[in-house]
Amino acid sequence: MQHSIDRIRVSHAGNLPRPPEAERLLTERNIEAYTRVLPEATDWIVDRQIALGVDCVNDGEYVKGGSFGGYIEERVSGFERKPVDPSHPPRRAGVGARDRRDFPGTYASGLWWSGSGGPIRPGFARAGEIRMGGGAETDLVRYCTGPVKYTAHDIIKQDAARLNDSIKGKDVEGFLAALGPIGLGGGSTNAYYRSNEEYMSAVADAVREEYKAITDAGLILQIDEPNFLTAWMFYPDYSVQEYRKLLEGYVEVINYALEGIPMEQVRFHSCWGSGHRPHVHDIELKYIADILVKINAKSFSIESANVRHQHEWQVWRDVKFPDGRIYMPGVISHATDLVEHPRVVADRIVNFASVLGRENVQTGTDCGIGSRVGHEEIVWAKLETMSEGARLASQMLWG
Image (cartoon, rainbow, N blue to C red):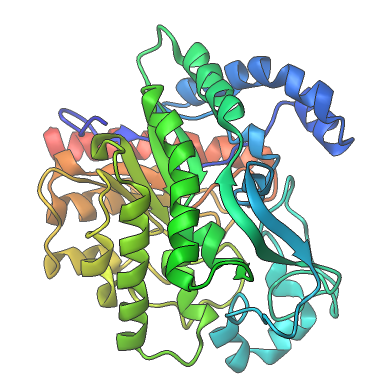
């Protein structure tokens, strides 16, 4: 993973729009045909990223079909979805639980759900369709009901080979995103293992198989773990100290999952959730930054561009950032269809460089933007303005 030696390097956090034919096949649920066009689609999105000035590219997350975490259910054994079991109720509250207390009318309207993910921006939900867990009333809960094992070794090798074929001979790095152990284990209810420790160890062992296949292929592994920041909402009565204790446990699980994985190839991504909601009760970075950097990752991709968090570059004046690491702040927001001005992007980059060192900063997006803004034209414009902002920042920082 390269530092920004003579200019600010450009990357992003995840999913991107699909080409029209792939989009049509996925919408029709023609998975067999969709799988056949993935090599061509991957070539298309790699070339599109390069043309827009991206230095570290991915496959658009096309293999996930628009779900950053749902894909994993087809790659591990031991889980099933079923109605809530009263003897094993869900362990946590839903998305935005703290905000919901102050904005009951907003949540009752369903308008907060707009832009929160899916193959296309889903638009406004209707009142009554949203429950505390953040999904439709008909949603089933994911339970662990048997041994957790990774079962998709051939598939992940194909994913990695496809991206490697697309970037071969091109002056870019490649990354693949994979769900973190907390995203899989913490988002499910254990109804099989004797203890939570045994359960989470099994989950970490399973996802490590995916991580190893990615890094063995020479690619950068991005661990998607929004729960690291969003879980503050899931436990609405926790104090900061209680939450810090929870995160210390998360770090132990994440680092256990990373055992044997080269740190130089690991990027850790987290954000405060994609829902277009008030976010006034997000956990502030200053309370948990020192725990975040205990994760054995070379790079940290953290939401930093939205209006609740764009001031938090100042946290690193007081918290020691580990030597030799890279920070990839979001300088483009998925929370608005407004396309940022390149100078706004440049100023955000320069702020981080002033406290972390220019060589340790790269650009990122707050989250995957392929399904979280109004139209793919906005995605391309945002990536282009991010690259232009990086060029401006490089002029400001290197002259």
